[in-house]
Image 1 (tube, rainbow, N blue to C red):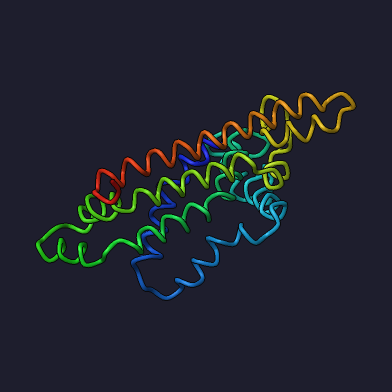
Image 2 (image 1 turned 90 degrees about the vertical axis):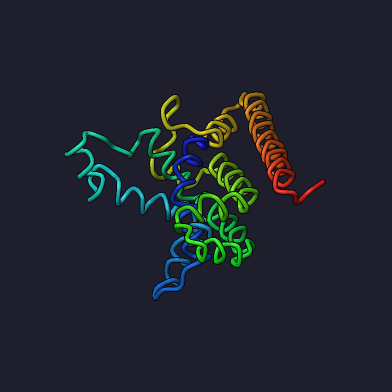
Length: 215
């Protein structure tokens, strides 16, 4: 679920980060607030709002179920959606800071020479911002991996369907003999998080070396 949450968040996260970093428009502050709202709201509130919107009785949820026969509520896709929303602000913030650190003069020079804005974004901005994109993806993955409040509120904690790693740990510690299982699951969570951080750092160093920014 954390992997799907990260993959789904990347394209819109990069787009929103670029808009916030490079564009000036009325309502930019409001967009910035909306993007970061899940960071400051209690996760249970986010999960409840998702339940209202995408539940089977919700406006969007009923529309999806009636037209496509698809439902987020009490489904693993709903857990991925809740996790992606909770990790989205961290992804956007990291990518935005990375894009803002890219010399805008390079983009302007390419545009002056006739390059299309899409080409400038794909060949100049994003490659130079790649370390920040990788860092943002890891932060999003880590947040999604540890998400509990929004997920359990939106899709419950159904073993084999919507139960996430934190949900499984929570269930284990409620049992009289569940301490050993909780410790094993905690070890799995730590191992996944450390592996993701190490992989991100390794990829970021390779990118920096490729662009001549590290020995």
